[in-house]
Image 1 (cartoon, helix red, strand yellow):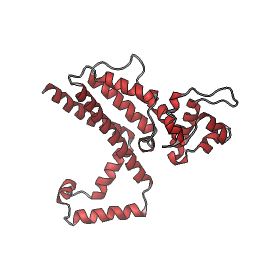
Image 2 (spheres, helix red, strand yellow):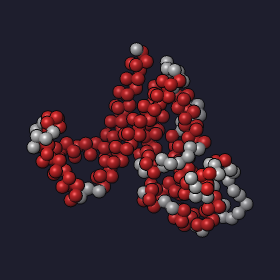
Image 3 (cartoon, rainbow, N blue to C red):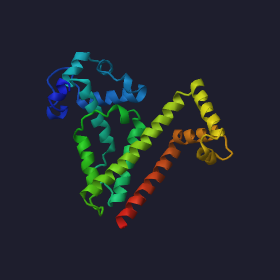
Image 4 (tube, one colour):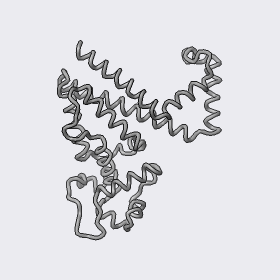
Length: 246
């Protein structure tokens, strides 16, 4: 653990003040998010953020002590996007969970790099508010405490899985080239050769290339991806409701 981690979370100390130029943690996080959204998470560095703010790198360290703390600030910023405004949480566990799931998906659409890149961030106040809001969403579900937590976990797993598959599809599409074509040709040869009878039956008489292209097109088309997400979320919550009824 780094020395800054050992000293506790950034939220445990007040923001510094009294020096010029002065920046807020929100400003620093906003610049970091903008860089990651435009160029990928790998482009984010303290030096780059300082340059965007028109400050020296050491000046930035006065506000954020390490890259770890920068991750925490970035996570705090994106968690703010997931929060439902006070007084607007829908009534009923199903409607409330659906709205939280949609907001979470929309956040990952805006920041597709966040799912994997912020895994080591420490939860801040907005993450705690999100968890509190999630608990409020399932408060009227006819389940015990363990059942409510399990329901929240299942919905999170679905949302994260959808975001991960969407991101992987887009990454593969962006990297498509002669190598990707050769890999597809390898798969087509083996499917047609009878090595995978169930997969071959699924394809029917269609060219496997067309099926792969259609699947990629669905995930690349944001509207189709959203509709697919909604169908899956509905089916998931239908199953949860049936289980509660049973």
